[in-house]
Image (spheres, rainbow, N blue to C red):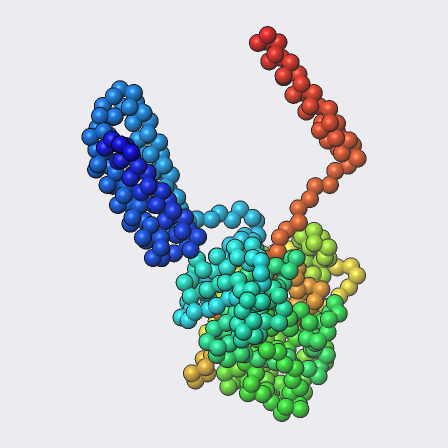
Length: 508
C-alpha cells in the first residue's frame, strides 16, 4: 500500500481523534477520570498532534486556496460560537442560578433550612432504598447539596445491598433514611402524592444532629386543650407539628407532680376553663423564677386565677372580648368576634409573620401594664386594626365604641435574666387560634410553633413550615363555555383557512 505523506497524516490524525472521542465516552459513563479514559485521551491526543505535524505542509497548501480560506473563515466562526456556548455552559454550571416564579416559593429552600444545613459540621447521608429514582426527591436533595457539601444523597437498591438496608433500618421499598454519627432517622413524606417536603427532610436532619430532645409539657386538670384530642377544638395537630420539629410532648398535672418536672423545657397552659389553685399558680411562678419558659393562652370570659403571675411580669390581661369591625374576616368566612392581626411586634416570634395574617376566634386583650418599666423586657407581639374595639362580654348586637378602639394588643412576649438563665413568658389572649380547625388558617400555625421555638431557645427552627400550593381556577358560565367552544371549533380554524387562501391568491 503506497500512501502519500498526507494520506498517512490524515489516517494517524483520524485514529487519534477516534481514540480521544472514545476516552470521552468512557469518562462520561464512569463520571470520573480513571486510567482507561486517561490512556485513551493521551494516546488519541498524541496521534492527532503527530498527524498534524506529519501533514503540516499539505495543511498549509490546502489553506492557501481561496475556497479553503472561505471555508476556514466559516469553520473559525463556527468554532468561536461553540467556544462561547461552551464557556457560557461552564459558567452556568459553576455559578448556576434558578428562578422560582411560584407565589409560595415552592421550589426554594427557606432561610431557616439554609441556616441549619449551611451550619452543619458533620456529614449527613440521605439514602433512598429503591430501584428507580424519585425525580422530586432528587431535585430537592440537589438544593440541599448546593447549600452544604456535608449533604450526601444516594439511591440504593435494597436487593443488591440488603446488609445496608438492614443497617439503616429500612423495611420497605422506597424508605428514605437520614443518617449521621450513628443515628438513623426515617423520613415520613407529608407532601402531596407521597412526595417529601422540605420540612420532612430538615426535621430529620435536626433529629440526627441534635444531642438532646426538648420536652414541651402541657398542663392538664383545668379544662385545657388536649394534645390527644383530634376533634375540631383539640390540639392533636399541635402535637404532630411539634414532633415534626423534633420536640417531645408530655401532659402533666401540677398537683400530682407537686411542681413542674425538671424534664420540662417549656410549660404550656392552653386555654384553661377553670381557675388554678393558689399553690398551682405559685408552682408556675417558681418555675419562672428559676429560669423556666412558659406559654399561657387565656380565653375571654374565663378566670384562670393567674393574675399574680401577670402582675409579676408587668402584663395586663383584660376582662373583655375583642370585636373586629373592619369586615375583613368575612372574606375568610369569619365574623366580627374573630379579630384579624396583620400588625406584629419586633420579636423573633413574629419576624417571619410580617405581611401575613393570623385569626383569633374569641380573644381578649393582653398588653404591657406599665410601658415605662424595663424589667422584664416585654414586647406586644399582636396588634389588631384600628377598627377593633372591646366589649365587656359577648352580645348579639354591638356598636363601635371609640373609647376602647384599637389597635389592641392580643399578646405579649417577655423575658428576664435569672442568674445564667433566660426566663421567658408568652401570654396570648386566645387559645382557639391553635385548635385543629384553626391551626392551618393563614399563619396561625406559624405563630404557635414560632412561639414554642422562641421559648425553647431554638430560634433557628422558627418558621420551618410546609409550603402549600394555592389552588387557582376559573369558573365559566354556560354562555362563556359556549363562546369558548365556538372560538375553538370554528373561528380559529376558519381564520387559518382565510389567511391561507389570501396568501395563495396573492402568489398565484
